[in-house]
Length: 212
Image (cartoon, rainbow, N blue to C red; front, side, top):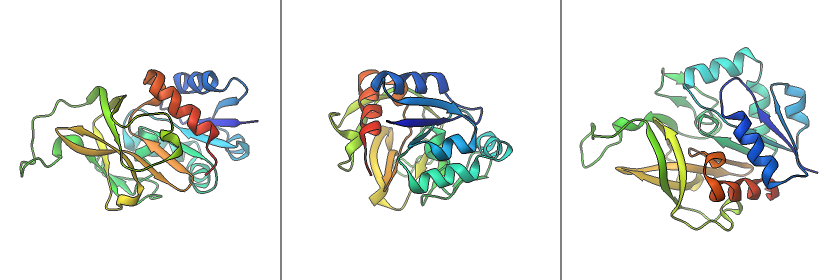
């Protein structure tokens, strides 16, 4: 039986995420929790998040969740959503914040995407709404989802990495940016599967079936 811990550090669309997971697998035990012991005992871990990176990292530390999140990202199926993606990288330009450093790269502001040599393109920030996700690797979480399928985004920052082998998906917002990453037992997205209707539910269902 699947037991899924949805990590509650005070920031994130927790109810929508948990309800979506319950919808795709009615037999799963989904627990929204900030208890490290419950997270450690779960078979799968989901870390959602919305808001600012400095507050995110402070909340993880204040609630004693940094260590258990790092452990989960190292040893069990792990899904990061939005801030749950960004926290996996080394640092963020948002508040000049150090993050978990699990994956190589950093988090940058969308407004400074370089386009044709111009560092200040006209972008509506935040990037909000539906956009196409182009799959850049084969992965079990993409099963049954066509490349170019639209998912829902709400964000002002994006992840940049010099390690192309971890990039699982990209999106264009005046220029391409990484919107999904995968390595070993980790899959993480900038978009919100829980807000992305049938495509998002398919991805969450794939996560619950995934054996890394």
